[in-house]
Image 1: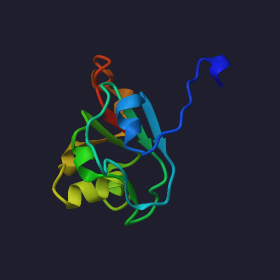
Image 2: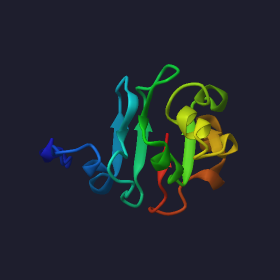
Image 3: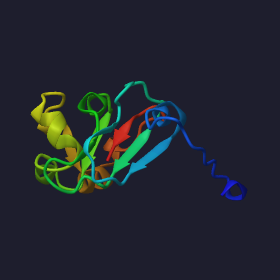
Image 4: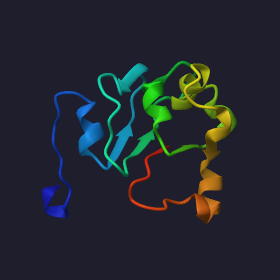
Length: 123
């Protein structure tokens, strides 16, 4: 993949990705945090896309890490309160449900788009 400009490396801990990557995609069926276990420090401009937590009780991010994001985006905001990354963050009072926006709203409303390269998004 290097010949296409992609730089792929392995890391000792998933948390090392937070400081080294611009994009992290999680696709696990975890019922505990995989990212944000040992650190909450992230690279500016980091985009985390979580697609594995598809049922109640499943999540992949430490709720405190979720709270550090500049924007929280869900397919459907109401569904995100019962499954996925935001269910635990809201239940544990790290974020308010009103701060989660739908993907459709993000696409439609240009003022919600990234304003600079430092924004941290979780989708």
